[in-house]
Amino acid sequence: MINFIIKRLLLTIPTIFGVIFIVMLTIELVPGDPVELMLGEHATKEAVEDVRAALGLDKPLLTRYLMYLKNLTKGDMGRSIRENRLVSKEISDVWPATLKLTMAAMIIAILVGVTSGIFSAIKPNSYFDGTNRIISLFGLSMPVFWVGLVMIVVFAYWLRLLPIGGTGSFKHIVLPAVTLSLPSIAMISRMTRSSLLEVLKEDYVRTARAKGVSEKVVILKHALKNALIPIVTMSGLQLGQLMGGAILTETVFAWPGLGRLMVRAIFARDYILLQGTVLVFALAFVLINLIVDISYSFLDPRVSYK
Amino acid sequence: MVGLAIVIGLFLVAVFAPFLSPKDPTLQSLPDKRTTPGGKFILGADEFGRDILSRLIYGTRAALLVGIVSIAIALFFGIILGTISGYFSGIVENLIMRAIDILLAFPYLLLAIAVVSAIGPGILNTTIAVGIWATPGFARIIRASVITIKEADYIQAAKAVGASHFRIIFSHVIPNFISPMIVYATLYMANAILVEAALSFLGLGVQPPTPSWGLMVSSGRDFLLTAPHISTLPGIAIMITVLGFNLLGDGLRDSLDPKLRNL
Image 1 (tube, helix red, strand yellow):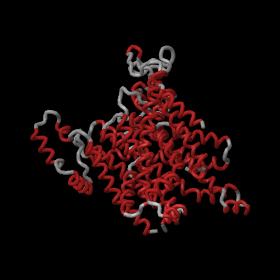
Image 2 (cartoon, helix red, strand yellow):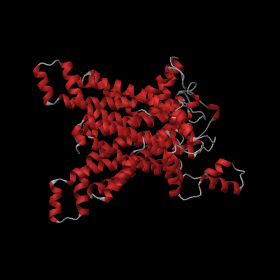
Image 3 (tube, one colour):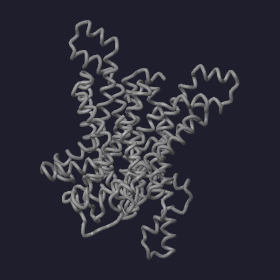
Image 4 (tube, helix red, strand yellow):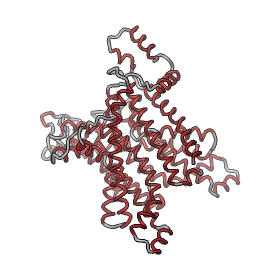
C-alpha cells in the first residue's frame, strides 16, 4: 500500500513539471510583448530593453522555465503587469473564495446526487426514476453560465429571494453553489444509480436478503459500500469539472475567486498573472487527482497490488 | 431516436439557414433595440436591434461547425496517439502517456482557455482549441481499448500468419473499437458544443458579428433584468442542441453495447 502511494506521488512530480512547461509554452505563444504592455506606448527603446533584461525576458524559453521554477520554490510568481502587485498575493487573496464555492457545490452535488441515485436504484423505472433521469439529462445539457443567469432572473429578480452577486452572507453563496453543482448532481446521480443497480444484482445481496436481513440494512450496509468505488471516482473527477465551471460561475455571479481573477487577467492581457492563475488551477487539479487515486486504493485494495 | 431527430433537424437548419431566417442576422436596427418577442421580431430583437430568431438560426452553424469538426480533429489525433501507445509498448508509449497525463492535468475548461489565449479567438481557432481539449481523452480511451484488443486470439493468429503491424492495426484492431468510439465521439460532441458556448461567453471564442449562442448569452447580460429574452433564448438553443447529441449518444450506446451503460 505504501509502495503504491509512493509510486503515485513520484509519478505526480514529472506531471507537475510538464504542466508548468505547457503553461509557459502557451503564454509564450501569445502575441504581444509583455514588457511593452507594462511600460506603455511611449516607453523608449532603452527602457524596454532594460526592463526586459531585468525580468530575464530576453533569455531563451528553457532558461526562463528554469528561472520560473526556481522562483516558484520561493513562492514567487512575479508581479502582475497591470498593477504591479505580487501575483502570489493576488492569488492568495482570492483562492479561499473559490475553495469555498467549490466545496459548497461539491457537498450539494454529493448529497443530492447520491441520495437521488439511491432512490432511483431502489425503484428502477418508476416515476421517480424516470423523472430523475430526465432531469439529469437536462442538467448535463444546460450551459453553466446560462443556468446562472436564469437563476439570477428567477430568484434574485422575480422572487427577490436571494442576492444577485458578490459575497457577504450565507445567502450569497446559495445561488452560485447550486448553479455550479447542477451538472455534477446529474453525473453523480447517474453513476450512483447504475453502480448500485449493478451491485444489487450480486449474489451476496441475494444471500443477505435470504438470511432475512432488513432491506434497509441490505442497501445501506452491504450494497452501498461496494457500490461506492465508482461513485467516489466519479466524484473526484467532478471536482475537476467543478473547477472549470467555477471559472464561469464566478464570472456570472461576480464571485471574487480565482476564476474571476483569471478571466480578468485574460482580458487585461496580463500574462504574468494569467500564468500564475492557470498554474494554480492546474496544480490544484493534479493534487486532487492524487488524493482521489490514493483514497481509491484504500477503498479497493486490489488497485494497490497492480 | 429523439436525439437523432434533433441532430438531423439542427443540421438542416444550419445548412438552410439563409432560407429559413426571416431577417439578416447582422443587420442592426437601433430604433428597434431590445424589442420583446412578438410582432415584427418573432423572438424579439437584441441590443442592436438584430433579429434574435435569425441569429439563433445562424448560430446553429457555429455550434455544429465547432462541435463536429473539433471532435473530428480530436478523433484523428486521438486514434493515432492511442493506437501507437497501446500497440507498441516501450519508450514511445511512455512518452505519449506522460504527455497525455499532463494535458489531462488541466481542469475542464482550462486547456481550451489557455489555447485560445495563445492562438487568439475566432471560430477556426476555437475549433482547434476544442479539438486539442478533446484529444487526450480520446487517446486514453482508445489506448485502453487497443491494449485489450491486442491480447485477443485473432490478433495472435494474424501475427502467426505473418501479417505486418500496419495491416493488423488497420484491418483488425481499429474496426474493433469503432463502435464504442462512435458513442464517445457523440457524447464528446455534446460537451464540445458546451465548451464552445463557454468560450464564446467569455469572449474568447467566436467573435462578433458572427452569431454564436454563447456570445448572445454574454451580450444579453447587461440587459438581464430589463430584457431577459436576449440571454435566455440562446441558452435554450444550446440546451436543445446538447440534449440532442446526448440523447443520440445514449441511444447509440444502448443499441451498440449495453455493457457501456454504466457511464
